[in-house]
Image 1 (cartoon, rainbow, N blue to C red):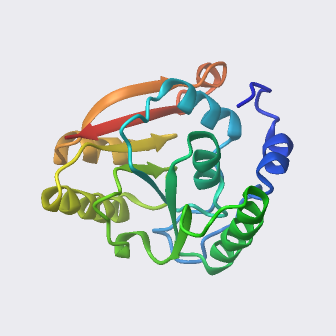
Image 2 (image 1 turned 90 degrees about the vertical axis):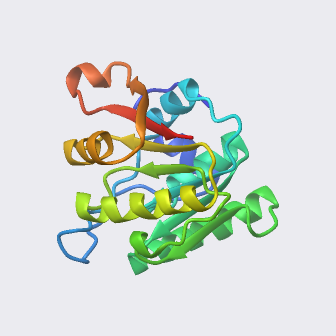
Length: 206
């Protein structure tokens, strides 16, 4: 990873051989929010401070064009899953996957994308790290977390929820209505002082 500041998108897009920039509306009603990728400088800081040892698989809810899964796989060599309900974004993610796979000479399965609603995704026993960049309303978030907790009951393991730019609704629900506990707060250097929402919150259960 390289510390080139906020304007480093061209570097990473070329390195990973993907195109994940821009934003796009969901067109699926007010419960699902527009696509906006996590800035690369934020991902640098997250994984510069967050220890993922012992993790088995990341799941990115509302993955859009796949920036987070590709970044995680490339730099951490971890299997990742992206969940996206928007058809055009899912197709872009698949195009990126084809380019990324060819460039890195990968066999299928290292990165997978599913075209479905987040609340319809069946959490696997190998899924233990879950990423959210405010992809949907708290009502949907509650259902997704419910599925995660059901999977925890079926196969107990350490699980983390990683929230970027966390909404008050998300954190209130986790703090008051689930067994997840806040473990780590990562403030983005320089950005946090201009905008206190520029941070990551990591909740855990085990």
